[in-house]
Length: 140
Image (cartoon, rainbow, N blue to C red; front, top):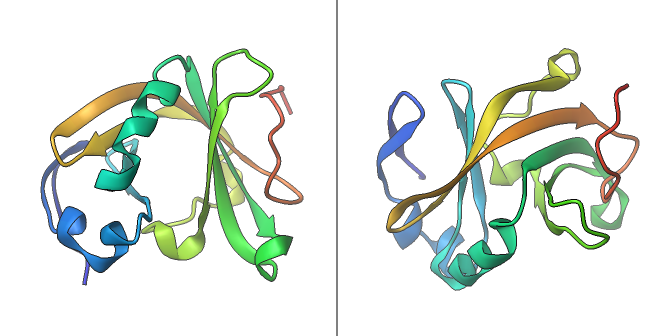
């Protein structure tokens, strides 16, 4: 069982990095106090270089047809390029899915490694017809 102890948006303790989930290279997204905290396994720590150029993270929620239509999230690290860094997570890789009426911004995305918080960016949320979406943000 995954445990996360919070102090507002901060993660003060978690067993994630020593979990089977992390050993297999799976990210986990935890929401608390207006922040989506992306926990990166040790195997993906090097991906921080790709995320660092982003000015925001677009979180898109929708069915992932290639995964049997499972509910999924896309985290697009928007950097203005034609090829921004992107992660796809199934619903089991997050502790909650935001409702459709939460579309818009007003939250932050923080990226955590075993060494603590490494990145903090504004977040934007939308529901989409399907994941992968890969579209830039547009006012709906």
